Image (cartoon, rainbow, N blue to C red):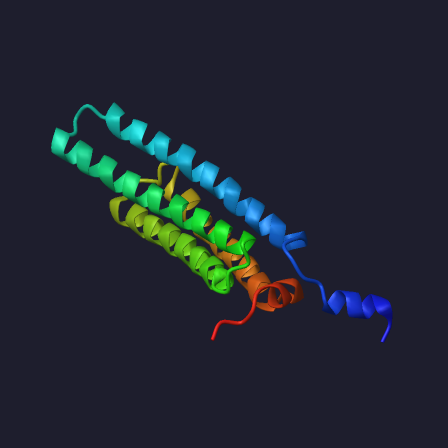
Length: 156
């Protein structure tokens, strides 16, 4: 075997596309934080809602965005510290993001209201396709990448 072929098979460590995935998770945390603040401020702008309903929606938003951000931070930590369950957590995160977008689009379709960041139901449904493509690409990478398979031991 040539030296170049051996180097490719033994590629290991956090780098390349794996570091780009981690960077994407960090950006996702920032975007979710900003989106969460925006959603909460939108809730408080509506003067027609009762206080109980207002606080209930705020609590749910904080719970949702806090959970997504907290889980993403844990995934980042696991990937950087080379934890054995890091890849499973990364895949779960991708599935969670896709399912949360799917649920949002379903509720958007039921209520007839576009999602907060979209202008119409059609934009909301296009979001689910973007999310699906994003999830499939990264899920495949985490499954088949030589770097990922060499860096993180298989779970038992």
